[in-house]
Image 1 (cartoon, helix red, strand yellow):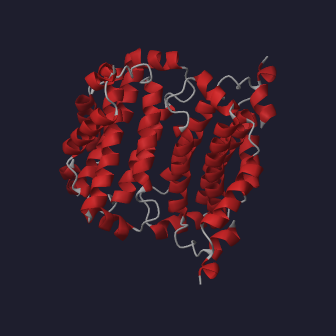
Image 2: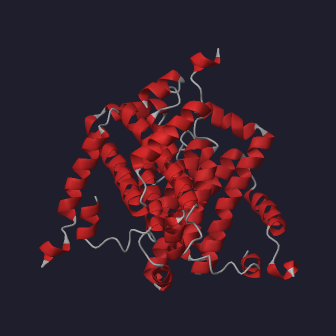
Image 3: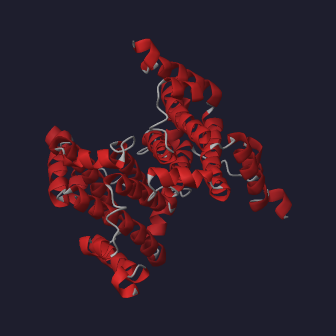
Length: 99
Length: 99
Length: 99
Length: 99
């Protein structure tokens, strides 16, 4: 990812602010596929191989900008995700522990 | 991730449509940190350990919902990202190959 | 609106780029109210006076930033809406004219 | 607006949840125009009549879905905006009153 960006001299555009916007914009493109669908239709869309491929493509765009953001901000994405999941484990205990 | 969601019986809420919305909402929370900042200030924010930790936390939320979405939609996220990057390699040739 | 912004010397932050971000962020806060709800629950939420007031408040934030954006970009919002609606009238003819 | 929607039998799609998503998606399309621009470039874009017209068009889409949302949720948008601005007046006193 870092090599790809550097080879195109895109670092100048890849400010944290711009990359945060890019993540938001790609997320909206993903949403667009489901905008007017019922819940059932949104499951059907996902079953169709062509439509799933399109949706996978939008999801990839979100992730790619997340990776760029993490690179530029010097964030270790795996660490950040694991730390957050550990915190979520505590904030939202599974049902079995609620009994 | 899948285990975490199942242990809380959250699958009913984790429709593709709802998860796409969740990604968009978390992306906006990431953007919020940079909303009124200049480019310079957005780089400074990232240098501050406390603020970087907060931003890493928002980024983790985006990724976590992306992972949930991929799980529910039966998308292999690594495949999707690699396929997209290969396509981007061709769509945007590095400057050196343009000469 | 213009007076409100000027009295606080906020024009420096109210660049077209920042205001577009602000609209997106407030829109996400509006979405957040409906994120995990079924269609039926989203109609119920709207019927509850307190929740409707909260939602109205988020909607107002979106509109207020749209007005700021229009001011800064010298766009006449009524003109823009009417022009777009006229175009939509033609792009999407009502069912009765399709017979 | 209400007539336009009814004539196309679009009320079934115009749930509060879907319209909130629509506002978020159109807001992202507005952001897209400014995504990689510097502050200066974003002011220049706004000065160009053709680009301003395109941006006005995206802004109109946001407002049109806000109006639809207000209609469906039985919200008086002018009231909501005025109430919010009155509250903002108090939350953020103008500089002159801070002396």
